[in-house]
Length: 121
View 1 (cartoon, helix red, strand yellow):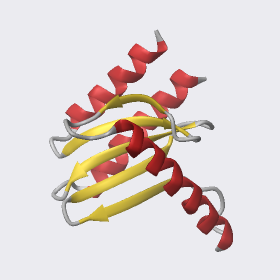
View 2: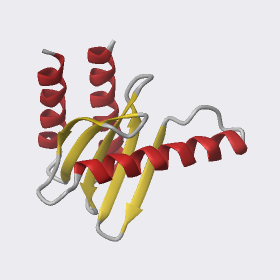
View 3: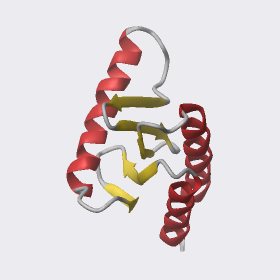
């Protein structure tokens, strides 16, 4: 089943780096498709916010002529949120702690996004 396979990708992503706290797949219209969230995270609210960030990011990229949006990195005092395209109709969001090595976060999230993309085709 596709949902089971996607959840396995998310679980693997979360288990790959100890600093990764959560991951979830969101449709471009803000609906949660699959999640491996940390306790206390509201998947409905979070997925809607991710969709809003994507819309703004795409508009900014277009305005400054940077092409199609591929990813958004948000950095806060407690860590990072990486939003990565996962095909034409979904994005993968990864939440990680402050000490994560960003190169590894980008690499692991990109690999997981490509795996999800293949499952969604």
